[in-house]
Image 1 (cartoon, helix red, strand yellow):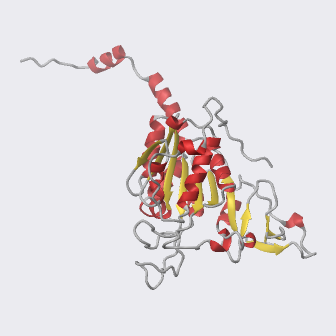
Image 2: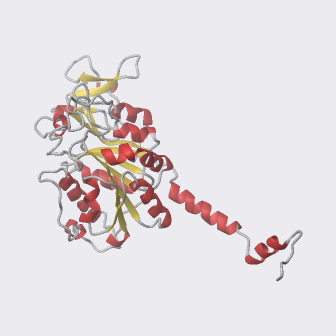
Image 3: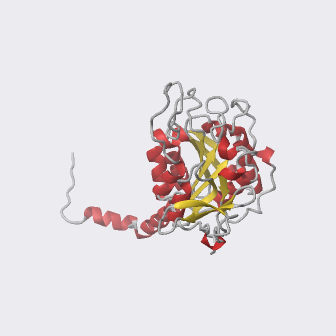
Length: 350
């Protein structure tokens, strides 16, 4: 089982830059302890490791705490209006396909007012890196519940607890037809930069959900699988081609229930359980990716890493191919002049 290969390669012609070289001169303004600081650090590290030229990078954001990120990067940036970052980024990429275009959005910006914009960027497979910061709350507007907030979430807008059914960001992306879907935790400075590099290498729309802690309005909402001391048994780090095992001593595994398409957790210390029964992670299997995306603690571990990667032709490549073909067939000036004058014509004089 081979993982999909990327056609992008490391840029060795650009002078080596350090993560600090991608920091702008703007004072970073998030709440102390906000997970956005860790994400910014991971992004700057990723850009340096990819050896990208700063003048060829564009970060496009919407509205929200996450969308301040372009201010803090020494690249081109565009802080757009609420929910419209994917549409603006699509225009940027089609106008200049040589640019590396990143979209920064949040669970409210991307899945509420911007849900339709995000859906079409994913289904069209525009060659963008889309990073969705998910803190399950509206932080900038002081703690209203968001599309990803869990039932029972109390906030200024839901003092008795939210009764909404939340949306899963990764299931949304898979349902929209995304060809690259991944998940990471804001503070995981080992996995997050690696996933961002994978997202950049992918030809087409890359969607990365980043679980981001809002220390003020939704603190520790992901503690069951993000807390370093308690998370081992509640998360599984996916590796293509490897059995789905997790736990402190890798003593737990995932398999399909007998005569069923549902997942179940098994204890590998049980002599009756054979490792051959475990599912093997296949990044190209959309059905399996949907099963993994639907898992939630405490019954199941949270799946982290690349859930799905199966490249397909992307919109910007197809657009410019079609444009070139149309231009090749376009009539010359003489042909157009003859066309306008064929048939019955007349002159109007004064």
